[in-house]
Length: 329
Image (tube, rainbow, N blue to C red; front, side):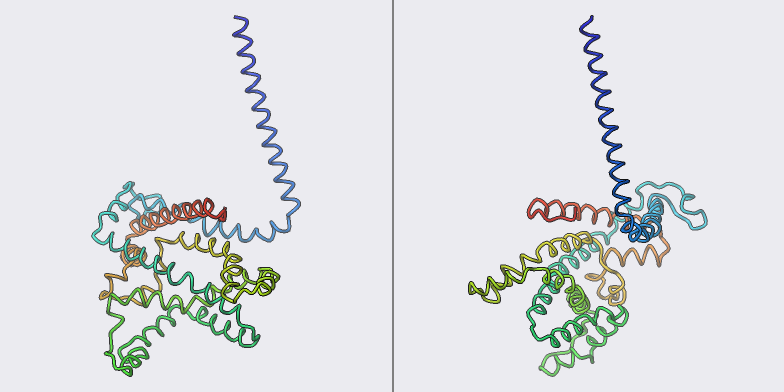
């Protein structure tokens, strides 16, 4: 009996000791946090407006996601609609357009990663190799300019270039080919979308890679030249490994949007004749959710996209960490 009481006392003492250690650890963690806060108070003041902005405009509106599970009506308010569970999700999954939307969205994103993602890397390496100062600045400025053109104007230019009597068709006709109505041909939509995206954003996105290249130690290039390395060898063995962490981080961020496509340009470019290849989840949600007034359905589809994108970014980050020890967190 005495041994049992002794064992119980030991267990109680052990638990009490662990709780005490945990409490001390929490206190030390809190004290460390306060100490860091005091030490870096100016940095926190600097970042405070950004935190407030995110809390108000990014996290605050999230409570509106509840309308994805109810029959929302503006008259009854966000919390006033009857609960319908997963009805809108089920309706989307059983829609006759579901697989077409998934296919089109995925293909546009995969083609963007294959063709659009490497474009700024190649452009940055090429710009870095230009030695004439004025020529380099001129090339950089010209490549950045399309980024500052609004989507509406950019799409207007694309439409004019590709119209029956536009520049592209005139060139085809001059070379002996037949004019084509590119904008009503489904098989041409993805090419137009990807090519116009590269034209508009490659120059601007190359800034990040140029900054990364500028951080590479110039002594590495000098040593490579002494060893007889050609320009291609220098790019392959010094420049690309030097900017690899930046490439991987941006690739992970791009994979986080695998089920989302910017719908503004698509809405301006597409028409019913090219729905077969141009209609994506976001444009479908716009037509039904916003234009059609089915806000609950639109929110449910948007939530589905966000969950898939979140899973993708977690997986991409984990794979990258395991393979290259480079990750977002």
